[in-house]
Length: 151
Image (cartoon, rainbow, N blue to C red; front, side, top):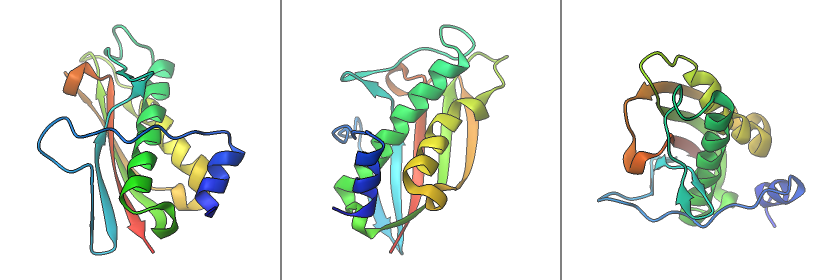
């Protein structure tokens, strides 16, 4: 068992099955020592977590949904290249479906960022962006994409 799978087991974290693309794109693609993972939605019990921050959802609920996105990102990494080839998380990009007056995007996307640090330790520390949007695919409350460095 590789160190990342061991870490997941020790943290009692089970990764979901990688989600299939919902449109015309690949879930992940390795190019030049990097793995680009398409935006992942938050799935709970097989359904997308929907809603808008500042309206039907609070910041803590949004962060929990972003964590689900992070789990799906890791599932896509495992499916695409296996964890034995993963060096670090380089960048996360987070989109938050929210009302115009909602401004706590960083706290929401911390759900995914904190997961990367929890699972990958220092290799999980990354650069990122967190922005608001009026809507996201399938009514999702958050979407998170990532770039990973390969060994």
